[in-house]
Length: 378
Image 1 (cartoon, rainbow, N blue to C red):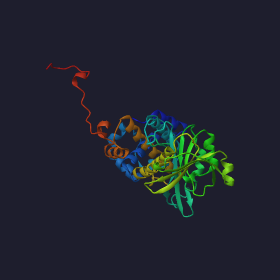
Image 2: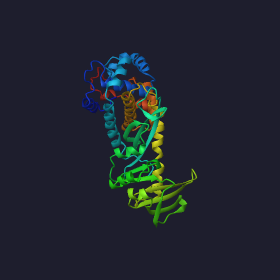
Image 3: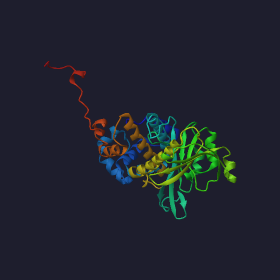
Image 4: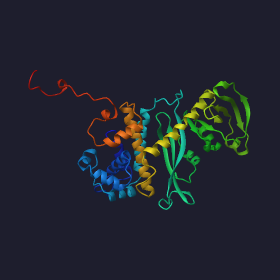
């Protein structure tokens, strides 16, 4: 917890008056308890209460000052504004992105590269009636813009499952010169044209029913898997009105999957093979969704209200980003999974964290360097 910017946390709490009329169980206590639940894979509020009460002598020095009770946790999850933890997660994300800004991701590019996608979290309709999805099913959708340098989410939005992912493009602030890699489910030429008008770049997989006319063909090397590199203009009635400028169409044969893939982009400078490699890197966001669903508590929830669910998800994201920050600052070679597993059984140990997370032993400080006189000269 020493790696948390608590001054930022206090600012987030004050912004939404999170500790108003709170006597014993503060927002900080709530955050630490739910972070403990994420790191140790607790299954319920009673589980959290039982485990933390067994560690009562160690709680005060760990920052937990309030009374640990299931009712206190439940009330906090229902009443404390979830936006406190959203804003704090974004503060952690800003720190993590600074640390990972020079991290390689598989393609030699100086520009920032983002992958945008959404994942669905299934819920029970009778318990979560506010999470509209289908007639007999409830769900949440986690929309994520992932910075491929370090796999740090730079934008997240939680919506009911019936909100289509393409609509969330309207909420993004597009960074000039950055690449946005999208799946074909985001094919909306009006929104793609908005990306182009913000001087940003996109790479998207084209649908099979794309209507366009070739204006020019560029030379390619077919031994690399490329099949064509063309400058095209859209000819569909609506698509041409939505995107009146030229596009670059690249067809690529993937030898691993034995499939032909067609990409569209508004970048005409970089090599065609690099465009194909950029889209392949989009798979990192699928791995990110798989990882957080397997290793964080975001599929089973401690409360059923919208506020409780969003609070839990944002604290889970904060824990993920915090572990990524620790990994970078301590220059650890271990994976995030390995770090999480070690932390889950050593949270209240007094052993140095670097020693816990590496095979190295922290050398004891030499007596000659201690600020203490020797009784005997040997």
